[in-house]
Amino acid sequence: MSVSQIELSLTPALYEWRTLKQGHTTVAVDVLRATTAICAAFQAGAECIVPLDSLEALEPYRQQGFLRAAERGGKKIGDAEYGNSPTEYMASDLRGKRLAYSTTNGTVSILRGGDAERTLVGCFANIDALTERLLAQSQDLVILCSGWKNDFSIEDTLFAGALCRRLLDSGRYTSHHDAVMMALALWDACQGDPYAYSLRHASHVQRLIGFGAEEDIAFAFRFNTCCVVPQLNQGVLTCK
Image (tube, rainbow, N blue to C red; front, side):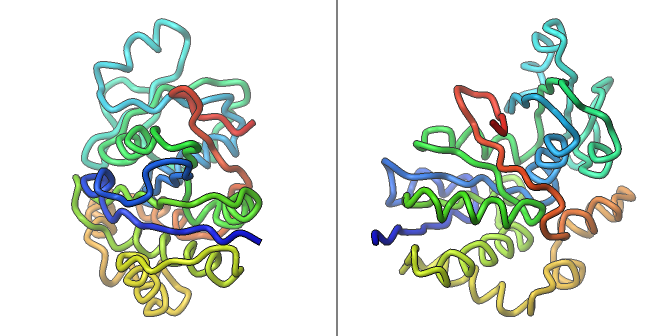
């Protein structure tokens, strides 16, 4: 049985300095809220989502019949049909809908990780489905945390620790990477309750509370609300 390696990039700015450069899977993570919202949108029936790193790139997709989803600094932008709220997506009927999606941090990370052999989207909402996919494929893994504007975030690192704990305990993965060890220590410190830990310590949680996004925050820390694993193929996320 082959054993795969895990590395962790704590911010997108660190991703280019990873050791694993070829033949690996990258899992992009933005718990609050982009990757959680993406999973929620697919759970609500979305056909595909195009991640974009600029607001200007949205307009051509509108002309092609895509719904636009846009967020900057935690707030919905302009006349976009959707923002970055996973609970809004879960309450919508998106069957057959296509979305063009641009956010402050998460879509940037997804695109940054697009050079991997496989690029997947991860969060607490799909952690079981994601773990099963990673255990089935026997490939080295880089976890790419979105953080906040290229800075470290507690909530993404907590998720990385939870995912690493599951993978390492399986015996199918190993790691001697310092960032992985730190994420595991943070996960152990939260005692299995990332929501309560993040309410106390995470700056982005407080930022979103200021915007009235308490329901989104609670949803983002619930396990396995979405049984989907979005994958990037030629710039488009699907769950096929």
